[in-house]
Length: 80
Ligand SMILES: [Zn+2]
Image 1 (cartoon, rainbow, N blue to C red):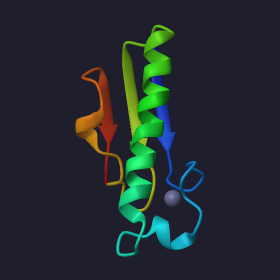
Image 2 (cartoon, rainbow, N blue to C red):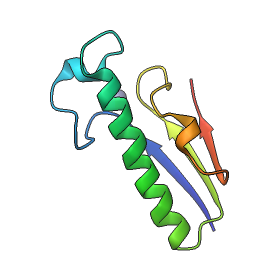
Image 3 (cartoon, rainbow, N blue to C red):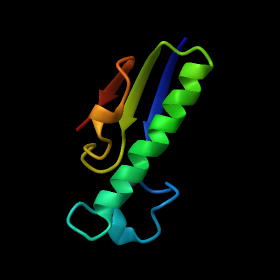
C-alpha cells in the first residue's frame, strides 16, 4: 500500500499564533518540531496499517519545515 501525506504547519496541535508559522519569528522552531512529530505519528499509523511506501509533501511556505532525518527509510519527502 502507498500513502500520500500532505502536511501544513497551520492546524498542528502546537501552533496557536500566526507568528509561530513564520521562519523568522519566535516559536517557529517549536512549531516545526511539532509538525515533524505529528507527521511521524501519521507515518507510524500508516506503516502499522500496512503502508510500505509513503510520500510526504511539506506543504507550508517554502516546504522546509519537516525534519527529514526523523522519518523512516520508507518515506520520500517533497520539499521546497
Ligand atoms: Zn501553511
